[in-house]
Image (tube, rainbow, N blue to C red):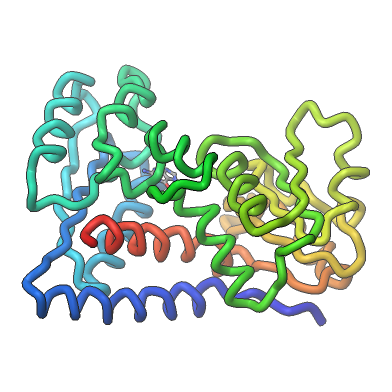
Length: 278
Ligand code: GUN
């Protein structure tokens, strides 16, 4: 029976640690405020934004919610971001992605002050991460590192394979693993023999956005498998990028979906919000 990595438990531990820090900051007269902007009403985004607001409340961070209509123009959104950048009461700014098609996502990310970019998406923060300077780190990959460390899974010297090369997960994930002294391989849709590469992994991190794509044929005996994906199957049940039941008997540790990586993303966002106030 493999170790089941409990992201819900670990994320609660992190949030409780942060709650204490926030209480201490309050005693010193420091309040933390996160501005959360949602444009339009994509149902998944509404759930994510709601969870972020709930986490703020739990920890003692003020959240300032902007629920903007689908028709909001790029100029209007940029103006709100500019106001928030210049508002000293606001520590963090988060624009929930995706934004509607008529808004240029890259322009929006670039407009957020790198000092308030708690998502870690701004090119300055991405650049800092790549050269090992302190800055905000993308929450999902930062959460994966915490999951591994807090589950006593050694990263140093391990063969780590990341499947997926997105700016939000795959790329920053590979940099963070490298910082932990792993040997890192990134695979993607053009990788010639994916199974051959993923089977080398001591730690396999999957973020490809395809339900149950990774079966036991892709996994080495005894590997640690981290599943970043989240999907709803035909029965409306949540599943990941990994076929959990199929790989279960082969792995030494695995994250479930739900209750694995998902809750960690929000915990790390809260961590970034606390950092933004220090
Ligand atoms: N959409 C999906 N994941 C994220 C995230 O981590 N941050 C933001 N802002 N939008 C998202």
